[in-house]
Amino acid sequence: MNTTSDESEASDTNIFGGHAIGGFGYGLGLSLGVLIIFVIIAYISYTCKRHCGGTTTLNHRSSDDDSSIVTIHHNGLDEATLSSYPHFTYSQLKPHKTDSTASGCSICLADYKDTDLLRLLPDCGHIFHLNCIDPWLILHPTCPICRFATL
Image 1 (tube, one colour):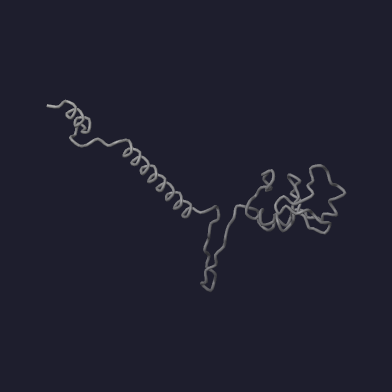
Image 2: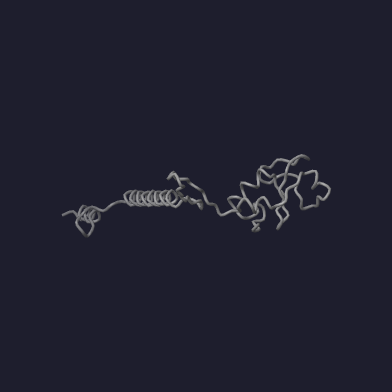
């Protein structure tokens, strides 16, 4: 009997009687496993993001004529608080300009003109275009630069 052929047959079979899988098979199986796990995590993330949404919630109210009105509640400031914040034209603020006063709006990145209406946030002193900061403050109760609460 030839001992070399017996050794080669023994090395090709494993203890369960089947043939041994080479390195390519393990690499392919591992790659497919990682790919399947990645797809599952991406799908779970997508469904959670879709179902949980953002911080905006919808509240349905019905009026006297039974038509439903959808109102959106935000975590920002209400209109009364927002209108109580001072607003100026840039020409009024220019004489009092210090090093901390910016020459342009950090939301829209446009330079201020003398006729632009600006809103001054009272707690931190940052200024923005009125049309830029008001939508932000309706959604967020903080300054977009320093995140200081403006409540």
